Image (cartoon, rainbow, N blue to C red; front, side, top):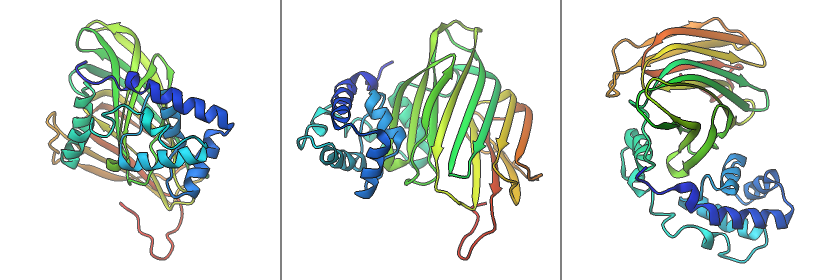
Length: 306
């Protein structure tokens, strides 16, 4: 694919890290708590990716957490950091040098992936389930048609709303396996790939399902879900399930063309607040599709971001 195989190069680190965790007898939840107490928070998703070899610490903040992990796990200084590939800090510098709007594309390019021209999304169904404890589970089902011969993976790209937000835990549910995952904490970016069972020929279809598990602070005044479509989708269904009826809800669409230029046909309208909201589109345009909701009354000093 013309890029460094992130998973293979992380195998040595993953083995060293896995062995150290096993010897300690600690769970990933306990490790997360210990790191949080040391003011270097790392999500369970990130720790899980490090342990599986799908991702490696590659930014300054992650390396600081790794040094604390050596103390928590009672291993020698440098045992974990020394297991990293020699280019761990430099390999994604091209992404950091790019402008904010171009960083996602730059990261995909560095991994040899592209969001455009490889496949057609015939059907997309997003189910968002938000819970009172701050967790949000987003399950996606897609019917894809290959636009090129040899398509064997589907890329995903995410940008966190805030740098302190933990990245989601990606789980392949059906029709695919999780491949490489690259997280750039300092830029709030995460890119992953879903591996198909076999390469597809032009015109062949595949049905796949994956899940994202997010951890947000409890008792936020608002919530939301955003989907950016790189190309139009023939049929798109967006379903939101909430633990209680929101005070209000809003849908926003910001279409763009194939070059990413926003269209003047932006749409924003209120939704009927409900614990189960469904929005169905035929020929959904490329661009942003977003649902936001207000969960409770605002307190002094709080404002909604929309």
